[in-house]
Length: 295
Image 1 (cartoon, rainbow, N blue to C red):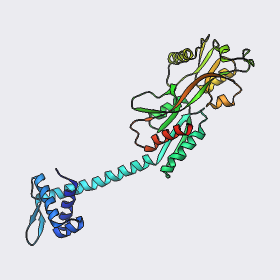
Image 2 (cartoon, rainbow, N blue to C red):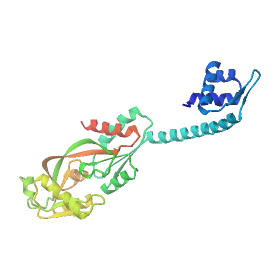
Image 3 (cartoon, rainbow, N blue to C red):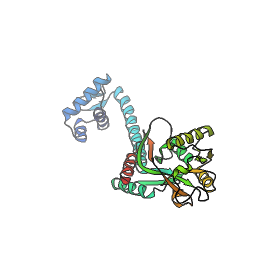
């Protein structure tokens, strides 16, 4: 089988036409160079050099293979350089996206500090997007990793995931709701209209099915299911008393709105997602660091 050392010996000898100089350039003995050349000639089935006591010269086959291997060497270096530049770009950046209403900046910051300790030159971008944009950008490989709730997991094969943390679920109720008294509990609102935000590219029937599934898990029996176009619309509907909304304590809307929060007693998973064929080691390193930062 033809190997790289044989080709390098051949190209060097073809240039200098001297076994002694070739041996010096290759840091070998003349005997080793002769063996590599003989083996290459055997593998190719042609004599590549004419050897006499006074000179060494290329045969017709030698000239043909010299042109071929020279082009191959140039193409090899070109491909190597292109590949190096590609991996420099891949390994030098990290594009992270997360659901726009999540308040997780401190966890992300801590995880990035850990990753940058191993890769000080790492350039990173953190973007906030609505759920439908987040999944769309992820599917188009515009984001290396996304952070969102498990119920919004991107669909498709070859997607890796890792739990970042669990956060308490809360029921959000308008302060104008007559049932929102000082001693009220979640049980007082189990039959109230239930508001759910639609997910990306989801049909109305799918959104309602997802809402019914969550209601069943929580033991709710709503008089009506209301599907809002997005999360902001869902919060507005709850604020104006059109129904109740389930969220988490990681949502800025939960923490900063006028809505009253009632603990449900259950948890929701926040997860990291990335593509299995992602070659940037910083992606999985970040997911692991994020998990540890919340532990």
